[in-house]
Image (tube, rainbow, N blue to C red; front, side, top):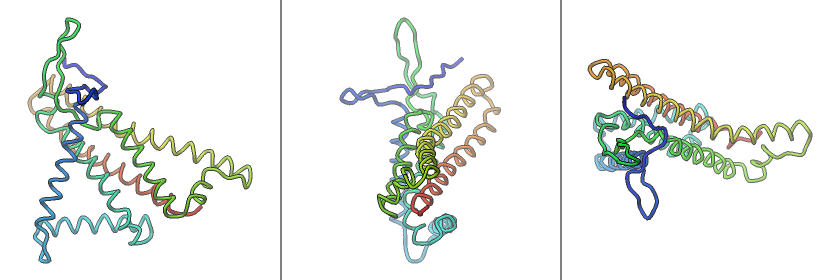
Length: 245
């Protein structure tokens, strides 16, 4: 039976800082997205190619959906780079994590008279540190947008208000909900991706032929849905933050 470890495994050290297999996968995801963006931007023209047409249709569809949430095209275009970056980054991290060879390419480590297999690559979102860091960035970005849109005092008054006892307790609940958002963001993505990784490992070990294929298709779908949910929730929270009470 393969060894299943919740914590990410360090594969190297840089100035005493451990470089884990999940950190390596997230770096590969960033490099892949940057390379695709560079190659695509080199091919853009006033007379669009079929690929450019498809991409422009996708962008227009996403902007239309965001416009419905934010209430204006200007707001949608303003926050599109952040929302789209989160979506494509999480999607790339999830889909790269189920490629053939991920989890099976690595090396053996000998410690305490035991031999442990250390995979060189592992899905980035199967590490709680990755999902928690992404959740903190998303929530703090939401608050930054809120402060920039309505001002410091107006944004803080949503959480700290002495105009009455009801407003005060509602503010406290809103403050607690901001912490709950980070927990919800991180554990939802981590739980789904880690559970899918365990499922693929177990089915691949027990019945390695044909049976894991439907689960691979399922994980493709789950990876897309989790990226969409993460981006959609960030968009909704941003829409709330840049609005007054």
